[in-house]
Length: 110
Ligand SMILES: N=c1c2ncn([C@@H]3O[C@H](COP(=O)(O)OP(=O)(O)OP(=O)(O)O)[C@@H](O)[C@H]3O)c2ncn1[C@@H]1O[C@H](COP(=O)(O)O)[C@@H](O)[C@H]1O
Image 1 (cartoon, helix red, strand yellow):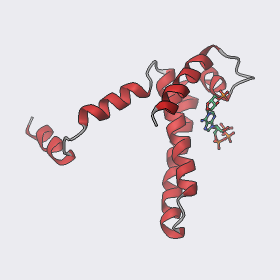
Image 2 (image 1 turned 135 degrees about the vertical axis):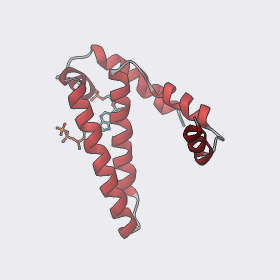
Image 3 (image 1 turned 90 degrees about the horizontal axis):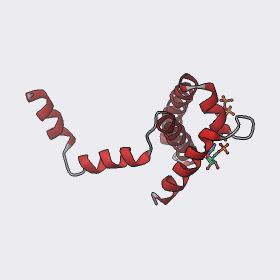
């Protein structure tokens, strides 16, 4: 399933050279990091609202769409700064099987 992330990261990389008038991703790069961060913040807020609605309506469809928007804009942010999903997946893999509570306790001891 991470195939789509691999494919999308190739497209996002290509869009750094594309014209802003022909591509949404290129237009974000052209507007710069602040615009990309504004979109990430906006999509995070919309995701939170969709999660609250989902709990009430018992329908997760809008939540899934908003989360996809958030992930997508986060990938554009990473791409703008020279990273991609592989770094994030590697970090999650590094954390795998390490209890969040244990990790927090080990930080407090340091
Ligand atoms: N996955 C996505 C994707 N998800 C969301 N979006 C766009 O993200 C935008 C932001 O959503 P909003 O609801 O905030 O829309 P908006 O009101 O137009 O945004 P603003 O004017 O406020 O900035 C919309 O235009 C969506 O179409 C995406 N745009 C592109 N992709 C992927 O990126 C590829 C490259 O896209 P282009 O660069 O446009 O060719 C595409 O082939 C897709 O695979």
